[in-house]
Image 1 (cartoon, rainbow, N blue to C red):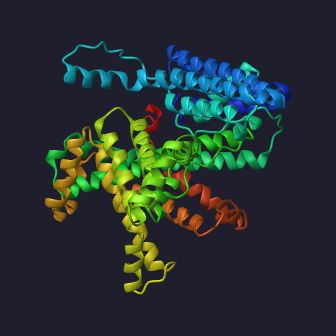
Image 2 (cartoon, one colour):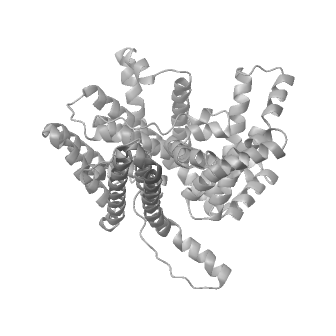
Image 3 (cartoon, rainbow, N blue to C red):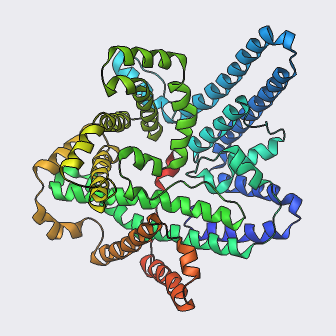
Length: 517
């Protein structure tokens, strides 16, 4: 059931009516039933993976809760010996939950690729599983494992009601592509008893329409251009390769962030506020800043459950002390944390898919971020020589442009079918640009016509204007509410007209890109 289908709209309307009409004590049960109906609509067989994750993290949470209670009940005389034993048991429970769930994820996403590598390296013939990929498997696995770790750390009491935990792991708006929620933030809202709030209903509908605007008007059209170029990259000069990559950059952002807007708008209609997952990455001043603004919940998950445990661990502490003693300058100070950063971006790369290009992409980001730290003093010196203030508009525009170029280069790698293809396309872009091709009929042979390009241009201008206003601290909804009714009407009518005229005929939107993750 795609978010952009009429079936989903009917499903959401029916759910919203039922949700607010039934007794309030049953509202969370309706959400659970709706979530499983939604999930099963993509394939009943794959629900077994969601159930497996739910049951394993439920059992792990109960065991950890019991061990936490035992530890608190220890007397001073018992603490010395038993506390260490309980700590080891807790670690074993967390390890088992991680192995079971990440092991399932490995078998689903990475086994066939790994088996192919081993076959070539060892001359073996390992079996292939060819398993059907469940909807949003990475998202519910990461979210559920995060819950287990929070219970282990004593930050979260275990949920003793299996059905309620099942709602947390399966809540349907986020199951396709996130955001990756934390239990303490989402669960209390799922189980709260609610009455109709027309202001939230209106805000939710507005956010859904904004998501449709980005997905249907922009992402779908530029996606055709990207697909055409990347299907046969050797047929085009460098300027067209750059155009196709730019199209993919726009597609990826509007597809992913548009889907998240629909997710958050859906939840808001039900009275639930979901975590923000994008914060205007177009205006990032560095690559590290870009990743703090892009897929925020994945970044915060990696920070809290991978980066901090690694960088604060004893081995990394010893490495940090050794490097500060034996390596001069800033390199010695940041070696340990940079290594932890590399691990994080390597995992993020692998999270995106089972291919060498994603590993390369992880290293690419890690190298750029580490290099920027090492060259920080150099950049400050350049700025001083150019007599630019740190917060000046010119310096800000330079940093934004620099970050956009770095991200743009990385997209060649992730969009190409193979690493070597992406590197070859990047090389051809530089060595065989041919700017005249951008004004030729080649541009019209990429799958869309001038009308589509015009729609993309207008819609993108609206998107950039809105995000620029938000970056400057303008709250768009509050700003609109203070405007005359005619302005409010026009603000809603323009996107609706573009949607109606831009998605007519036999138009069938593609699945969201991140649904496959």
